[in-house]
Length: 452
Image 1 (cartoon, helix red, strand yellow):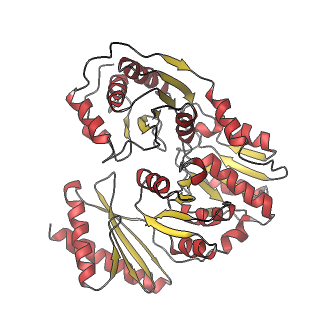
Image 2 (cartoon, one colour):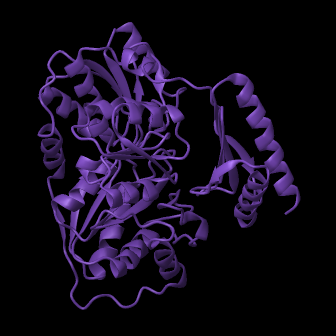
Image 3 (cartoon, one colour):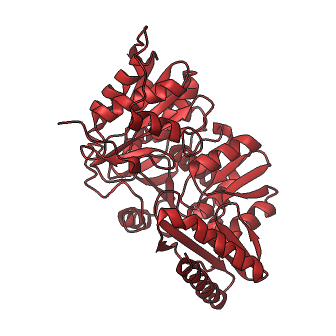
C-alpha cells in the first residue's frame, strides 16, 4: 500500500482520526511518533484498542517515537483510561492510545497525552503536531535511538482497579462490551470482586459484529432486555475504548450521563466542587446542592472537563455524553471504574438503582438538534445569536457557545468542536415552555445564518 496523502481534516479537536488506508496508515503513524516525540519528554507509553489495523499502526508509531529518541513501553491492547493510568504508573512523559473509540471498524486514530495528564488537543499542542506532519518538519532522527519494551500491563491495571473496591458478593449485573477493549479485563475484575456478571457482545476481534462500538439506546436493546428478563441489579454498556459508561437501571431505563453522575455523587467520600458540561440537566445541579457539593458548569469535551477537574481539585466531573471523571483518579474518565462505583452504591445501600434515579427531578428536554453551518461561519453565527439574546434581555453565559436562562428552563446553542454544525439543546420545566424555547432557538439560528 502506498502512503496516503495527509488530509488536515483528520486532526480533530481531541485526537487524530480517520479511515485506515484512506486517511491514515503506517506512514502517518510513524510521523505521529516523530512529531509527538518533539513535544514530549522522557519515556512514552503506547496502547491500542482491538481494531485489526492497530498492531501495525502501533509498530510504526513506536518506530517514530524511538527514532525521536524516546524509550517506549508497549502496553498492548487496553482501554483508553488504562493507557492514561499506565502513563502515571510508569511515570512516563506522555502516551499515545491508538483507537478510534466508537467509530466503525475500518477507522483508527491516535489520542495523545502528556505526563501531567493534559490531552493534546486544539489549543494545547494539536496544531503543532499537525503542522509538523503536514509540512514534513520532523527534523533528523535522534543520534541515540530509543528502545521498545513490551510490558504485562493488563494484570497491573486489573490489580489497580480491584484494590480500589471491596468485594461485592451477591451483586448481579450485565455488561455489553460492544466487542471492545473492556472485555479483556472487566470479567476478571468482576470475578475477583465476587460480582455475578452476564456478558454481552464480548468478542474483541476488531470487527464489532454485535453492534457498532457506540452504546446508543438502539444498540443496547439486548442489554436492557437482559437486565429486565433476568432481574439483574443493573447493566452497563461500554464504548469501544471504555472511556464512556452507559447505565441501565433495573427497570430497563437508560441513564444519560448527567443523571448517572447525579446518582454517583452518593458514592463520593468527601464533598467539594463537581464540574459538569453546559449541556447537563438542571437536575444535576439541584441534586449536587442537596447533597452538599458545589456545582460548576464548564465547556463540553474531554480536554476541557478533564483539565478543569484537575485545575480545581474537583471531586468529580461529568458530561451528558457519559464521560465520568473522578478526582480520585486524578481527574481521569474511566468507564470500568464508574461501573464499579455504581455497583458499590447498590451493594452498600441495598436500594434498587431505579429508586436512586427516581429521587432526581425529571425535566422535559429536546434531543441535541443539529443545524449544518460551514466551519468558517459557525462561530460568527453563535456571536450574533449571543448579541441578540442579550438585547432581548436574557441572562446568558458564554462558556461554550451561548446559554440563555429563563424562569422555566434554558436554551444552549453552540458550535460543534468537530463538525461544520451548530447544535441546540433545550430543557424546560414543562412541555409548553420547551416548545416555546425551541421555536425561539430555531428563529435565532435561522436569522443569524441568513445575515452571514
